[in-house]
Image (cartoon, rainbow, N blue to C red; front, side):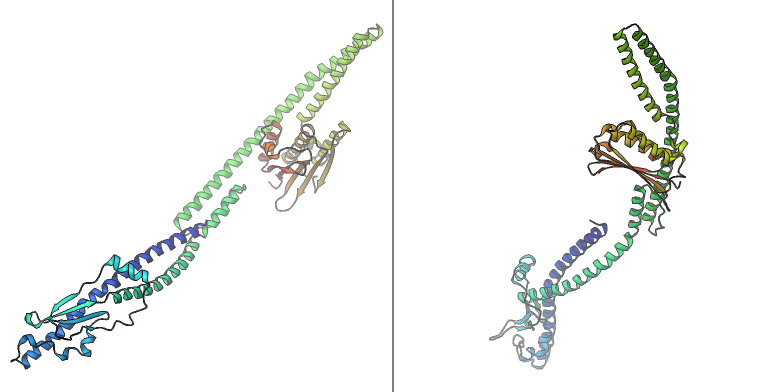
Length: 455
């Protein structure tokens, strides 16, 4: 899941939690606001009745005080205005046929659902009536009793919740949208960092990153740049060391070739001469057994000399240093074709201008082609082998060598092989700054090497 979506989801969760807390508080506050309205209504009505009480007391001083109230004057529209909606007020002690005077409770809001009307009183409790004396100085003046309407309190709470939810949902949507834009803008540089890391994974270590305004992203960009510089330096050092090791190994191969030629070659030639002499002498003396043994020694010597010549060809300086890459590849393919008619068909496909390719690049290309052909011919049962060498000119001047065969084989197992031949060409290609891949082909394997020529 993308980081932007994760942050937005967490933000929405926080908004929903805040919305739920606000809804609970709004429910509690709206439900208990009826208690406050009841107390206020009782206080206002008591003050109004107190004024009526003292007026009646002054005008009718001969009348008993306990009969001053209630008087018809208190049940007026002005008194109703003092009573909050959902509250009923009555005077005590009440006279006959006295009914409570209630505030207007209709129109408080939509009727709440049954589950809400059942849950709210259960958790928040019921409402208590409020009693206020008409006059603190005259206890006989009576009291005012204000009683809240529970149904009106629930309706008021439900209406308040609907208003809060509407506003809260609009705010949540606006916060989510604006926060998403802000988070996406803040994390936009992360795409540049990921792109740089992907380039580094492909070998382009020194990738410049733009300057970021955020301190944290700037630190990450600086660390990525330093890592790329160190990887580039380490790669250059490793390539230089590999090239030096290859040079030392080539020197050792040439020295070994000279030793084989000088020592084994001369000794094999001497053995062959002695065997020919013995065979000639045995023929004159009619010694058939000795002559046959001498011929067998000669055949074995010829076989050893052929193997020695083949080893010397592989050990001595490659032909590209002498004849050029194109001619040396043609000679390489012709030499394999001429060894046996039963060999598989070898197709050579040369594309592009190969005449000016020399030095380590030509040597590496020749060694790759030589090793791949050798492996395909000696270790496989291929009937057809294709060697393709192409020069891709342009901004990225490079040489592509591809060898494909139809002799079967497991590409994954071959790629993980630690054989000297495959390890050697992999080291050469890496030292030249190129890449080597081993993939399955139609009926066999495909070995491809890319060697840059621009450097």
